[in-house]
Image 1 (tube, helix red, strand yellow):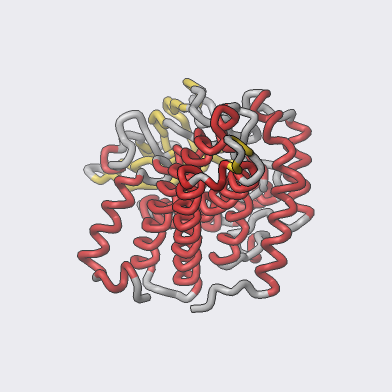
Image 2 (spheres, one colour):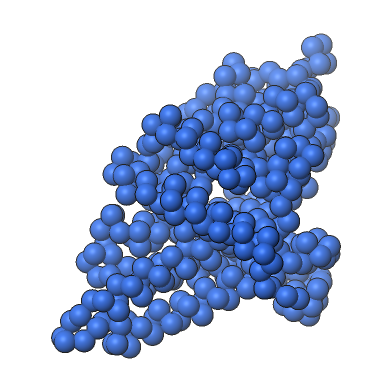
Length: 393
């Protein structure tokens, strides 16, 4: 395998870098001071700017209006987006990959406007009592034989989306007698019976909020089903694999920026007549994080290469979990070390290191906790073999 960037990949990386550094990063400090609120008009400008440089809909096929990027291309872009705090990369228009399963009517209503930056959808999976163990999911969809509609009931937590989010992909069990068939439904936020029950604040200050929703006897037509009855688990798993790779890439990018800031500071800061960089207590932790950053980047890019090469999806799944597990754990260690290098300045919210310290913590939790990633990898070692999981394709 050859990880040298082609001219096309280099151009894409530079385009994503310019958007991140010139458009998003200048907004970071004010975004934090304003408690994660951007004027809607400014948010729309960020979306337009992303579209102008063809960063929108990157992972979606060209046939549906996306960029049709390979997984490696997605990783290259997310490495750059990960270098901004505040989750401001959420303003790049796109859509969950499950929306490629939209029928023509659904596509016109949900997918097309999402790629254009006119709508945004959330993914409603987690519940109060159902997190990592999706088998305990209580959300239900009961068919009404008289009307042909489905009656949805359930409570969803951590329904992530930025300020323009106006529909959700609702993961529920279709009730057919004794059967419970996991199914996805497209549900607009203004549908009667759907309400936001709580919008809590979190450690991080993100462009995305993570509110809770309750659906009480929400009626939707059969045409709201996305991808077919009983297909939700597989479709959701496909999204998890993609997002875990993206998280690995963004964590790699975050470490690159953190190390850049730390080295610049430590080589210019003088104490006791010497640069603090010349004290091993400062430079050695940064060296450890440099090793972590390099490993995280290689793990994520190798996973992308495997996916693009048509490797066994089960192996790609395991490698995505390895990449997310290592990169998310390493990035948090890196942020902790860099805050320490900055000392008191590192504890100020105007310092990107402080913001990364709070923000990177969630990467060890969402889209599958570190413990779930370890479980996936451990099972893969047994079922797929050690060689395929840790080295061979």
